[in-house]
Image 1 (cartoon, rainbow, N blue to C red):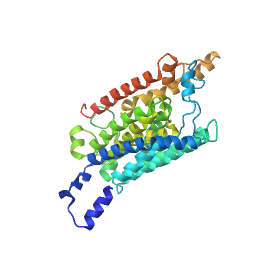
Image 2 (tube, rainbow, N blue to C red):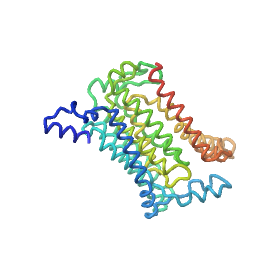
Image 3 (spheres, rainbow, N blue to C red):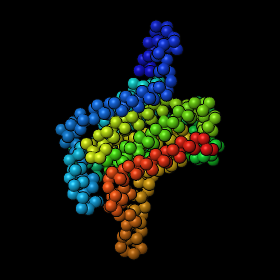
Image 4 (cartoon, one colour):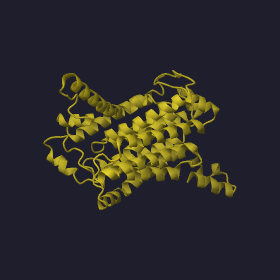
Length: 380
């Protein structure tokens, strides 16, 4: 829409600043439009998506079977819920970006490509598990290799989209609450490698968090809104200078982040307890990867540990559980668990918390962490 309006104005020799269409010049207006349209799309097409997934027999395996004891009501409730609902989120996000974003901006195309390609990996994995009844879906190594390649190419393209000053900034490394970079002029291979780690890590962390109704998507919405603010602030030279953040021409990406937030909020309408459908890898891998790439673009990679703290803890508990299990088996001959179950939301479930308590409390923590992250814009 943005490009079409300018084409019409140019062909008719009209000054857009003298018409109501001048609003489309403002990133904030288009970001709001993208969030609202993605939200409406997800709401309107939600039930249709549920019916389609059920008709195609895209019904998820029981996620809690063997994990949570003596909760037959919950197990039966989730037994026939369709998966691969990430199609709805990605569809609403991509359509909104196509309508509201500047498609002549290379960053917009990079993020669209990342969302589509990671979504395809997630879809293939879900399809094998849900339809073909494959226990493991795509092999872990193949899925990780695909994520690494897509992430590395995306980060490399980010570096080459900017001007000389932007490239110099891209080779620096910042930490939260500090105005100046802690490392400067890092080799491109290091920057691409680190950025790839952030994108892949974020993608898998969101995926691991997708274990309860509304948990992953609710936290994703909060994180996306926080990084939309950063994308806008870092993309405005005056704001960036005043706040002490790097100026990286990232304002247009706030439209993408806003679309993710809007689509996620609309999906939550259908995914809140009791869920009508699950997001699956189709949505979680793509959304997590996009948030990680925004963090890389605005040079706030380490801040993702704070803003996306829920995802970090979820992924961290899985890693700790595996390490502790293998270490105790090697040292004592009898493997032990550090948590009752990992990721940690299952630990709380087995400790007596209800699913609704866990999800809402995690949302509250995610909000607090997002506020802390946003506060770092000023506290430097």
